[in-house]
Length: 143
Picture 1 (cartoon, rainbow, N blue to C red):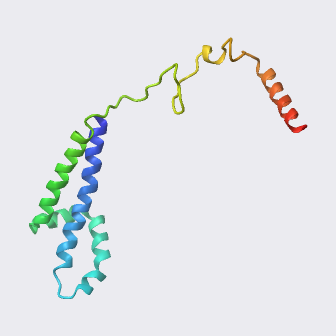
Picture 2: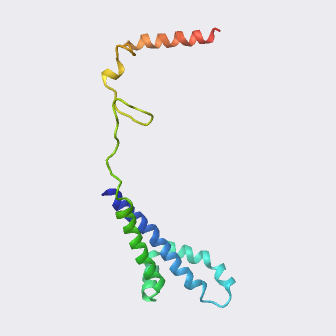
Picture 3: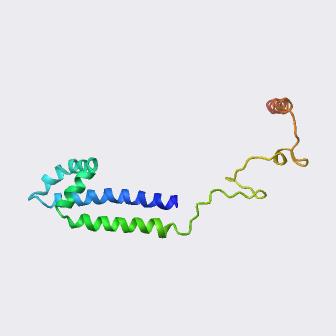
């Protein structure tokens, strides 16, 4: 459930910001006579739209810009699709570890039987293991 809510909020927020940008840029680009004048002011309009989304939304609603309404509905429906249908088969079940067949990436806290096993490992004191390590390093340097 958390994944679905997060997917909806993330998709809607990103989509809404894009709809605001597009809805303010298209009327701005096509309102003047010369296109070079509009291109020079384009970065300031984009930054103003991004920094003041509430004022931009109020302006688009009062001016009844149809591109804004269509875009918001499309983003809302797409966000619903992503959160409900696209994440339908996925579970939020966490990690599953097979105790016998461990591979790279599986993890669990070791039990005493995993560390001290009669066939593979021998329980030893810390000092003994450290002494063996030092000896093996000396042997490696000699040849």
